[in-house]
Figure 1 (cartoon, rainbow, N blue to C red):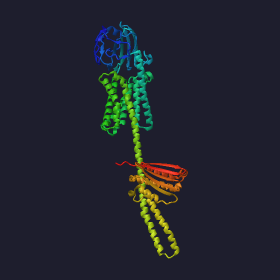
Figure 2: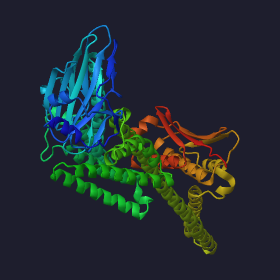
Figure 3: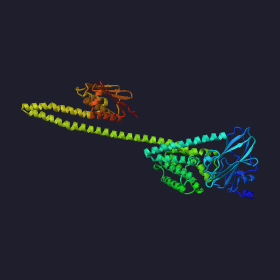
Figure 4: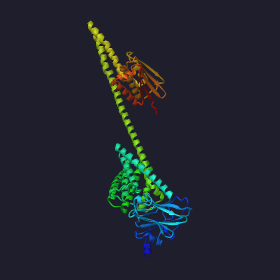
Length: 621
């Protein structure tokens, strides 16, 4: 009577069920069986406490209801739940099977195998989330139980589960013994491979942060670290594999880790998407508030015992985090940020799983085996894609920095060269107008003195001065011409270089000028800098090469101009005796060549030196 009374007072379950019969249909196990999720064969019955044991259940055999879900989700129903299913070996040989419950967050688990005469053939009781792997029937992080069944035999499996707080998921599958260990090997390999990727990403970005001090890398490393810890804790690696127990953390370990993950996701998104440059103030304020809320929740969940409220708050925090990140991504897409496009690709699987998970906790949305098996790898996909995105962003930022630095260097070089040219023009004008005029006046005055003087000695002195003044005037014109050739814009580079070379004295070095090909006018700035280079090279030959002969050649090709300056001087021997002035002259030539996009090459030998200046033609628009 007492047993019947207990059964009749059971409240309807929160999950989707349909009425069941007293007889339990058996799932056939045939030859070649590998695995099954037992969909359509699971039945459930709940009691308010643990006083009802397996013996009473076997006596009554009533009150069970069919589970209509593919993946049984008992929600936040904190009663004691009995789940049963029946098997029959329809094959031609005995079967060694394994019942696997891939969920470890339970406070009480008991497992029984019953034959067709209601005799208990196997039992395991008082298992929970703290049970060491060494004390489990099969060494695995979750719960696995052996089951042997002979030909034509029927077995009934009962197990009772209880979770004090939060939702209770029952991902139960039936495997053949070989199929289970194959699955276990594959699952462990995937788990360790995934955690290895996360660990490598965390270590690399952490090291990069130490060198670059970029917060983006710190936030990504934190995200990887606590995502890996949450997966390790959820899979039982921390407590059962490595026996790691964090102070003040027990069942609330995972929600603390997930709260920290939410914190780093928000910080990473703010930095990666650069929301401060385009997002509205209210979104930036919401994201900042979410950061503080995540930090506050972590502190609260760490200090308080695990409860339904904490679990609901963790789910709600994850949902709000995803919505805020989605808002930032939406504004990034509106402003055509490539980071936002990359984030959409990365977050789509995780976003789908997070919404599904939060809805399953908050409103009881059913989960499927696809959801359960892919849930761990959605964040892994995000980590890999975002990691690749960070790498691309770092390379892109580096290239942008180098381009800006190169542009700055070009602008600085341009400023220096333009200043030099302006100063040359000013000096040339001053020499020609002021000093040239003064010398001309002095020459006329001496001519007048010669005409007025009757003293032969004085006349001779004045006559000796006149050639010196004439030479000074010629030198002055030559220097002014070298500084800024007259009518350079009109006659161009080729004629200006020809005038420069032809004006040189025949001693100590005799210069020759050659020009071949169809003359192609370049831009004024390019031609003027090329002229300065040639002038500097000529001066170096006159001062340092000790050459008897030298030549300047301009060769106009179809797509470029090649200028050759060669001599038969010291060549390689001058490298050992060259002073600082020579080095500065060549550096100035290389600076100008780089500025106009030309290539300067210097070749030396015992017979002399050869300098090549290749100037590509600029495309015309």
